[in-house]
Image (cartoon, rainbow, N blue to C red; front, side, top):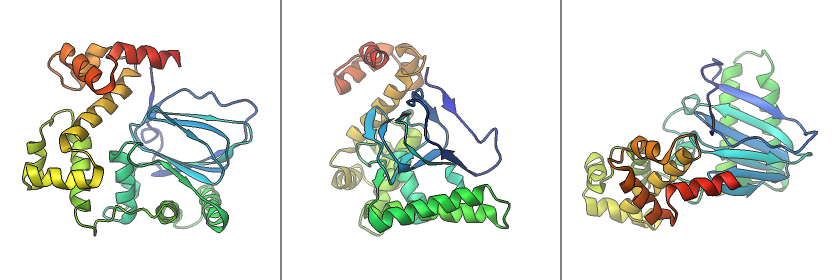
Length: 280
């Protein structure tokens, strides 16, 4: 079973910062998911970070963003160190570039929006200095500590956006509609599976919504809906749920229908997918 972690119930702090020290043995952390964001900042890095079934190399001077609900496993090697920032999206002010940036990582899968941000030279040093300052202040009792942490977390996200020339700006035609569609999809994919229903909520014709979504993603609305369902199915099939239970969790009326759908989309039936994951 893949455990679900939630620090909010155990800690009233909106933002937590943990130092990743060098290891004495290879990291064999189990795959898991959580109900909050984790932002990994690697000072020195080697190893592999599996994020939603895709392996990403752990490199020095890099940031890895793991959104709520994502299945991940950090397999870092001995000399890898850095920091992890744990926080809920509510810790970030709404309607800001940073909140949009984080919501995008929440709504898009890792094949659409890479969760990895690499830094070099002066940019790397600036980002790492910000992380060290954040960790130092987290462990202090200075005045306005909470505001300081929030602002420096915001600054690290801005480092990522600037370094990768993050381009999904609301000011560009169609971007805000596309972002709103992806937010709606993430929240409602279990219950709303028809494109027309999303179009109605957004106040658009089905044709217009498809045109915008296709221009931004290269995929139709219907294809993205199916993709979202498949991704969540994969996540659930990595827990102790049976394929039948996953089918009902995703609100398929018939487990056989779910099995046929999953095989059409992935080339494997649910039990075959589970066997492959177990053997890894």
